[in-house]
Image 1 (tube, one colour):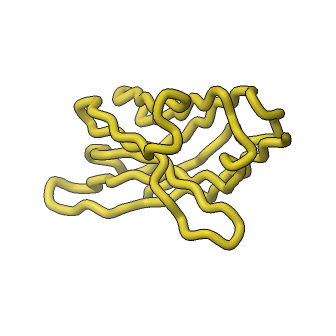
Image 2 (cartoon, one colour):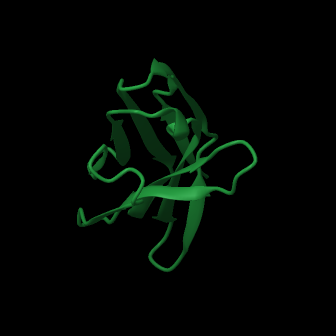
Length: 120
């Protein structure tokens, strides 16, 4: 079994910062791409940022220049540093990872979600 456990959400004023963390554990052979998604009330889940095992990154236009995704391959963790937060960043943030449990088997896993609320 594989689990993704998130931490770091909370309530912050506009302009503030938060750091989200996600740790993968369990029967892991290799962690491939990792990502953060978010879902605001009444909206679809959207990609916020993603990072490959080699460190290449991709960001949603709405967060470019404000958010930074990093990972620690040795610890199977991924972090999302969020600066200059805006009320429209309010959402439940989900960790996502493509994880191989054997040489030939890989699945996509999701964390349980962590709430980020930005007050104006």
